[in-house]
Image (tube, rainbow, N blue to C red; front, side, top):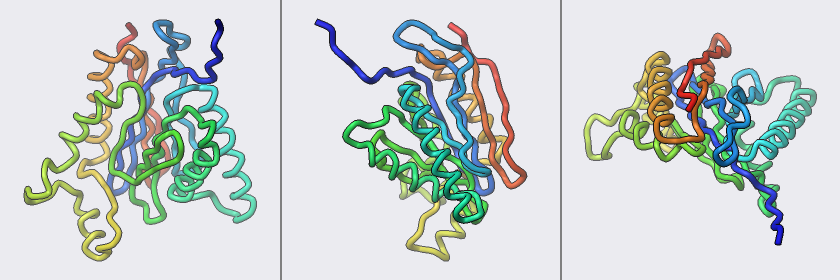
Length: 235
C-alpha cells in the first residue's frame, strides 16, 4: 500500500560563527536523496537583507517556500518603514513564520547570521517550529552532530569555573555595563573564524555522506558581504 510522505531530507550542513564585528555563515552545496546526489552545486544560503543571511538544511521545497515568504515580508517592511530590516528583527520574523506553520511545519532547520544594530555579529539558531536563541555559533543539518563538539571545544569555555572565561573583550565589556543582557560573541578574529569553518567542514565531509562537493562561505562585516568557495570531497 502506497504511503504519502510530504517531507524529504535533502541533507547538507550549515554553520554560523559571530564575532565582535563580523559574522561568518557557511554551507555545503550538495543536494541529495538517500544514496543519490541530485546536485553538486546547490546553494543553501539566501541573503534576506543587507546585513542578514539565512542558511537552511532540510527539505528544499519547504526551504524555498520559506525564503520566498521571508523575502516578500521583508520587502513589505522596507516599503512601510523606508529601511531594511535588521538582523534581530528578521530573527523574530523567522520565528513567527515557523511557529505559524507549527501544525504542518516547514521541514527546514535554519541558522540566521548577520550584524545587529550596534555592528556586532549575531547568530540565531532554530528548530523546525520557531523556537530560537541567540548564540555565538551554531550548526544545523546532517553534519551538525559532528561539527558542534569541535566548535564547542574551540569556542566555548570548558567550565564556568575556569578563569578567565573565553569570551571576546567586546562581549565582556557589554556584559559588565548590561548585566541583564548577555551577547554571545566568539573570541576569534574574522580570518580565524573562516579557517575554523573550513576545518570543521573538511572533517565532517569525511564522515557524513550528505555533506560535500563545495563549501560556500559568506562573511558579513561593516564593509558589506563577501563570498568565498572552496572544494570539498566529492565522494
